[in-house]
Image (cartoon, rainbow, N blue to C red; front, side, top):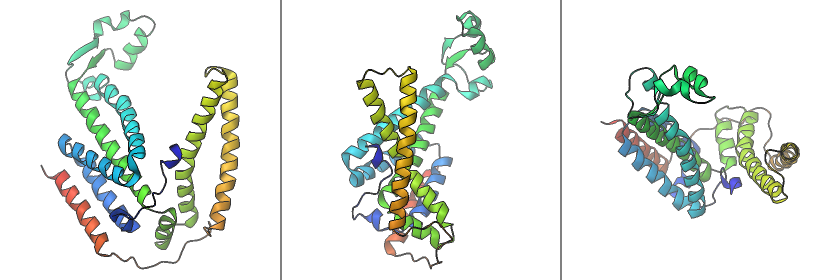
Length: 272
C-alpha cells in the first residue's frame, strides 16, 4: 500500500480534467486560508470534505491508509502540545492538571534534573489551551497534506513535468522531484517488508544483525530501484537537460470553476 501513497489514480473525474496550474493556484489559496484560520469547525468540515473527495477518487483502501496516517499524526502532535504547551512555559497559560508539580520535579528518579533543566523548573502540566492548539495544528497539517495528496492522485507525472517545464523550470529539477515522490513510499514499503521477514526469521530489532541487514537491503534496493526508474524515464523521453519550450497557459471553463470553488473556500475560512 505504501507504493500507492504518491501514485496517480487513473479515473475521469472533474478534478482530473483540471489543468496543473489551476490545481496549484487552488492549493495555494486554500493552504493560505488554512494557515490563517483558527476556526475549529471550519477546519474540521474542510478535512471531512477532503477525506470524502479522497474516498470518491482513491477508494476505501486508500482512505483507510490516509486515515491511519492522520491518527498517527494526532497521537504525536496533540499529546505533546497538551503536555508541553509553549505558552505555559512563558507564563501565558495556566495548568489545567499537574502531571509533575515543580515541587516534585527534582524528586523524579534519574530524570528529575533533566526535566528540571528542560522545563525551566516549571514542571509538566496538562493545558486545555495546549490541547486546543494541538488539535488546530493537526487539522492544518492534515488538510495541507491531503491537498498535496489529492493533486498527486489526480495529476499524471508527465503532465506535471510538461506544465512546469513550459514556464521555464529546469527539467532536471522537475524530474528529480517527481522521482523522489515515487522513491520515498517504495523505499518505505520495502523497509517494512524486510523488517517483517527478519522478524519472522527470529532476528530481534535491537540486534546488530537486524540493523546490518536492514541497511544492506535498503542500499541494494535503492540502487536497483534508481536504475529501473532512470531507464523508465529515458524510455518515456524525459531528459534532464535544459528546459522545455514555453507555452501559453489556457484556462477552460472547468479550470475557472475549480479556482472559484477554491476562492470560495478561502473566503469562508478567513471570514469571522
